[in-house]
Length: 270
Length: 270
Image (cartoon, rainbow over all chains, first blue to last red; front, side, top):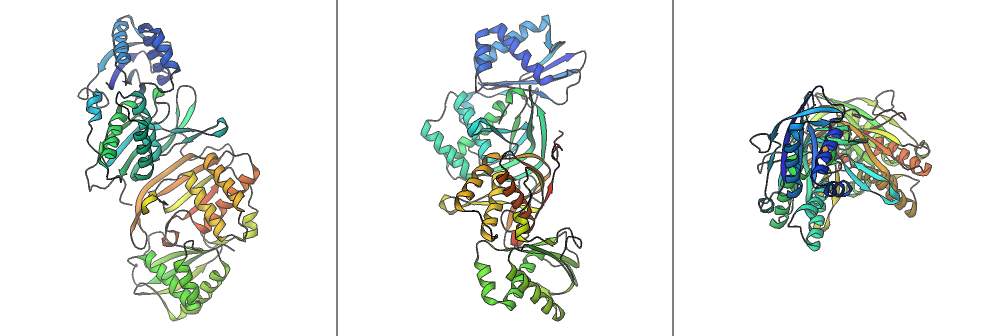
């Protein structure tokens, strides 16, 4: 089931490239658990995990790890706890594992949600998403170039989440349902407010990528309960899967917050 | 040729619905000049003018009027100057015409540009657009509903401007060139920065519409000089045509500002 952990790692000094090093640590632990799984994951197009460093790291690095796969979660956590007493490393710096926060009570960005509960999410029409780390959508183009969209385009948000649902959920939609959902989201999902929308470039492990952060309210105009239920699932999934590109390198960390019906979205007053 | 005037109108008190009243005044003057033209314009899908009230009106209302058609411009200006001594009205309030600012020296949002000069605009690749009044793109959907996009989607920006060029310029592109330009803009135009991006709802004469304001930097990746020249033309046109929906009701007022090559776009530093 989808899981989110927040690890507190303490070193001598703040790491230079915390996200890149965290990515390295994650794969080091995974190789100890199962080298074959580690290399398969490294090559996989759709990775069943995300990594992000929360806040500006000082000597304490708060590393958020989410997983969408039980074997991966158990392997990672077991190896982490087994290796921690010997000492861990972020880059070349030794760090100590001080705390593992696993529930929402322990940290607002930690927690878990069984797939069955996720699948029975309530129907949703109006929703504010907080994009906490820079988010970008990457589209492949003819001729091999890629195009970056650092905007909360509702079609791209829904598409990204639906792809993750299809790739990682044990209850994917059939091809016909999936196509129908894509079409409805493209037509019926609208941005009805945003605030604190900011542009920035983010060092995503190897290169700087463009991205946006901020709070965006979406409204789904479809009356179909099935479509609203799908949107509800995707929003819940987003907490664990992230959205857009480079979610294993700290981008696309997003948290949903239901708006009450009739309540204006962010920034609705000029 | 494209023209932009700023009129200063002074009344006893600030008007309640300045944009709506300005729209009324514009058509009142136009009917005096040529009732047939006025009703044709009123019905036209693509209107060769824009209207916007600059700043927050107090007793002095600064009304910006742009036109893309010489007959319309001359008719409007002649009738305005002829009627002004008798007194004008914004809604039920009498106003006096105090100044007509016609050149960029007189007001940064006034000026003119012959179509021939516009057509020979220099090629452009990187450009910051300042969306000064709320801007929104309206897309018709299957089933008669419309969808609002209050985001600076590069494809929608280019499409809106290209449509205006085709409708109003004496030098439109042929159908094949137009289709090719649309395709290239959809693929090769990217948002590479933004700042002060805000969402708001705007009273556009009859109803409130959503929209965004702010500064957005676009980069055109195409190497084709022809495409870069077309983008240069559209950016210059934007000053007179506005962009997106309800430009005759104060929305979509946009001013371009070339960025120097190598200079980072707005907000490029996190």
